[in-house]
Length: 159
Image 1 (tube, rainbow, N blue to C red):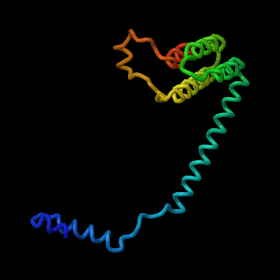
Image 2 (image 1 turned 90 degrees about the vertical axis):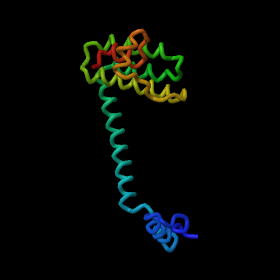
Image 3 (image 1 turned 120 degrees about the vertical axis):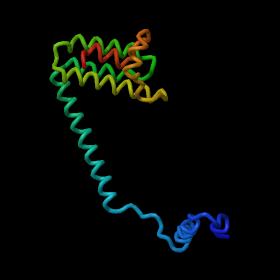
Image 4 (image 1 turned 180 degrees about the horizontal axis):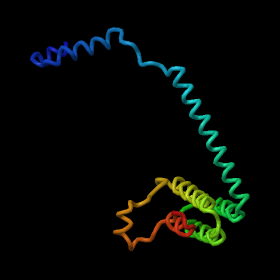
């Protein structure tokens, strides 16, 4: 039975009939990934490897310049669960004291290290990596205790 038989007065039934017949009678299968698409994926992967290598090198250089950052990096590697949140914040606050006069890029690198560790801990606990409130919620919920990231950000003086 055709589509037109179900809705004989429908002006779109003829179009629908042609579309269905066109697919059933020798329509082309979905296109396989092209060589260009594969090449684009390979280029993206190569750029990501380069970015990670460059980021690691930048962090290594920052740790060489600021030994307190290297100490923080080692300290943060010890934290693996949500129960470690207080100790993580204390480690960042201790490092913030040593990094007080450091360049803003060094303090930003310290915050990045803390943020990465917080995200890993949240993911391993089955939580979303970020749970930041919106700015309006921050103003209205002044009674709520700030999260670990905001405490670290304040301690490091990163804007």
